Length: 105
Length: 173
Image 1: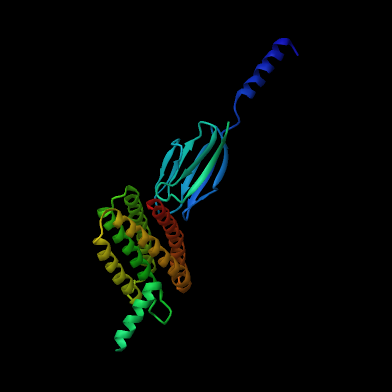
Image 2 (image 1 turned 180 degrees about the vertical axis):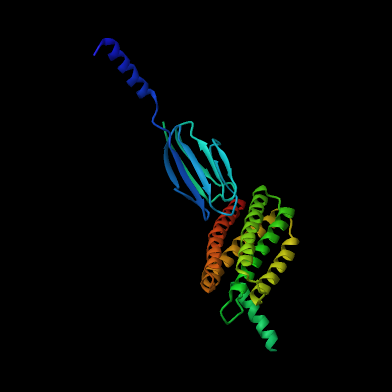
């Protein structure tokens, strides 16, 4: 292998190493006044998509103020996780509905 | 005399739980009527609270009750329409409505924090009573699977309301 080719290959693998692992979309369901799964593990850059299967209005409201997503009946809503940490959230209309997202860097 | 003693009996039953006066099994049209009536009662109570409550938290709770019970009752109406069932008035619905209007009148005399406390206490008790009736009588008696399903969903929702009401009650103390 010529030095030029070796260099090109190294550059290529460097690019590959820099592209982060594909961000995932994590599904969370709100149904019968319950959030499932109640705890999800995610990474920065992942998307959380909530589906409200109830006939009631729900919300995904972070206790720390990071997000507040309104989820009308039979609709979905999503956010992209921007920072690491554990975020507790609840439904504004039904405060007994609670869940957690653990976000890894 | 007979009339008077059965009325007295109805009152006794009401004080502990919903007076399910019927000795015979409830029919689906009657169950639909009872469930719908129970929802309407809570909407009326919540509208009174929106007018009279002083605590922001209590008002918020009342708003949640209006929103949810209207949504569930709309589902119920859609279902009875689809099933071509006509809800049928019955002694249980009548007893519920009578008890509810008495409660509305009683709460109407209260003001400020006293109203808030009485409303929330009644919401806890009312949801307990209705949930118990759903669990032990209305759901087991329902014949139609879709009606049973809706009642089961309703029970989940109203159990959530019961917890929410208990939480508000604790915060008021």
